[in-house]
Length: 394
Image 1 (cartoon, one colour):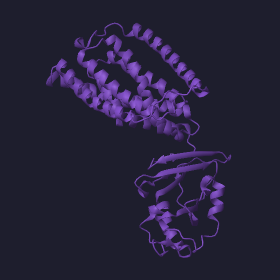
Image 2 (cartoon, helix red, strand yellow):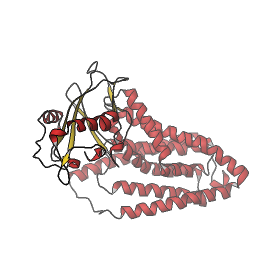
Image 3 (cartoon, one colour):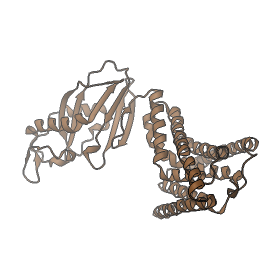
Image 4 (spheres, one colour):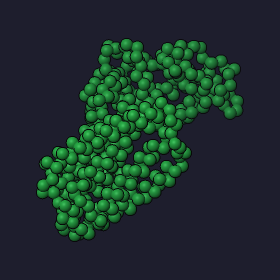
């Protein structure tokens, strides 16, 4: 109830204990203003506009009835708390029972819960009970937009395509890495093996992460973020000192594996919105990432060509742009390394979980090696000819 501060609740004494017997009207007002106005349910594509506020009740902070739907219903149907209970009104928990008439329990339902305005940060925990009795849990921060509680494959696919597209465009570290690849190479034929290598590599670790090949230690995410910054620094310095084009895709593959873990941190949290379509969601996220990368290529390559043709000499431009990228990424790497060192990093305990994880990582390495061999065969056959040898010859 602390989030409902603008409603005038009846209180007594100091600091202000709630008078339960006189609070029904204020509680209903708070429910309508703060909750029901921010909550929209949809049956298929039809918004459920008709609703009925069946019950409101204030519970103690220690109440745990929302552990299950049945417990919550039993608790909210109890008599209100007695006025003799001393409960500071801001510490109360507001329980609400609302009913929405529907056409069929077999319909596909969705919800748009806009609770972000209730506080600096709001965490919504939602459990959708399917007609079979199974529960589907959700947990999200702020306003996630329309959430399909039992999504079709198309709904899940579209959500994750959009998620991947927005993620690549909003992720400055991934964009700078792509920029490092584009600065010295503006030939589509030369870019194909490099971009393909990065795409396949991050797909391998992204898929592996979603299916559990991800260490549970707290320091792993900051380690990956540090290595991502390192990958940008390395590629930028390689641009400056020169590189062999035929080896560029190989280096990109190695760093792509690391970037895949970075993508997975977002995707793992979002898989709750996939319903039963986990594979579809995973592939769709990858498609969205690739669309984002293609958009970057389409926008950046022509700009670089014009820049190096009319503004600055190519070699000088490559060095200047790469130096700027390296400077930015170096600061990121230093900051992330400092944050990583705040964690207590210890040797793992040699138990069954350790050996199971070691086996999973071994399989991941084998898969990556097999893909690397196949790519080497393909690129040698189709892209070995007519590729420039060094950055100075591009």
